[in-house]
Image (cartoon, rainbow over all chains, first blue to last red):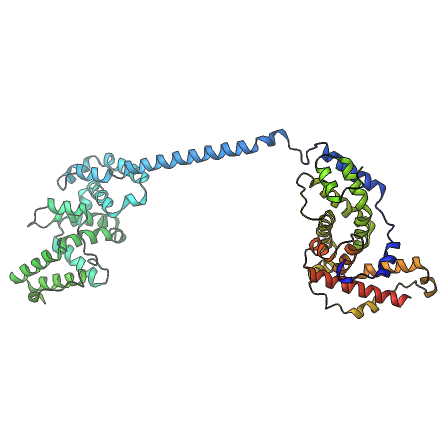
Length: 273
Length: 193
């Protein structure tokens, strides 16, 4: 031992006490255990079924993975099938006059729609897809539940104006009209008041009460936005110029304000400032 | 047959299937390990329990045994760990004593205050055997870490480096513990003489 820390007297004295030994029975137990260790006795015996735990666990994992993969794949296929449905329906549904013939068979139309909407995820129920649905609902509604059928374009415009003045932001997005609304606009005669398209919006509100107006508000925004906002700022400005030329200063002024709200960064031409 | 073999060679022979090698090894260390545990626990029952556990660990470690240190260092390392577990469940104070690296908070004068056995009479202590018994009592009164270091030095005949390796401390800590233990025991014996 280094550092000379040992005291020889102490060591000698301690060694005189070193007569304590373990009991013989303990010696026997330990020596037997040592011999048993050599005899190849497994330290921990495993039951026969325990040998199969790892393969069974691996198999279960594989089965679970395959099942989940198939389920997800199936779901994807269903979604893909459900997605193009509104477009097909839109194409199949004649723009306006057909609404008059549909009420004869409302259940037939509403049935598949409900099935589609049950399968389709929320993404598939975007406002664009909701437009044909609205149309179908409207078509299914009896004519007496549509008191706003004669509502004119000006009435809708006025409503949109009120909403925008109240900060609702109808024209906050420089909206190109949604495809469905665009199609409807194209189908309607340009000079005539577009009575039919607006009936689609007004009828549920009238049928379901005031609360439904809030439900259909986004749709109304889109349609009214589509009416008020031409395709491009230039076209819109041309329209404003036309209004001025016709002496409709109030409407021109309103349209200009709407334009400013829609395109706050757009530099107005000299003649319109 | 196994007399000339080192401890490590015996353990390797046991690993390779020689049961007699283990027996020889066991005979060499049985008393030393048992006494170390007996002094550390102060109870024969606890010492026997720990003793059996430690040897069974040696037996179970047979297959993976490689010579990485002296057999005694390895054996007393197992004993140290088992003792720590024992202290944790029986004596928090003793377990904490192993955590303290610096033993300077145990002044050497404490040795003078070590409890003298009530029954001792100076004339009887003149007898050597009685003095040895007193020494054992003083050893048992040492802080656990110092006591362990002293016992490894005396029973295991281990160097400071080996003690440090077996107890998981650095050499200076082992040295400090041994110094304090020896000083306290000397001071205690002086009183008795």
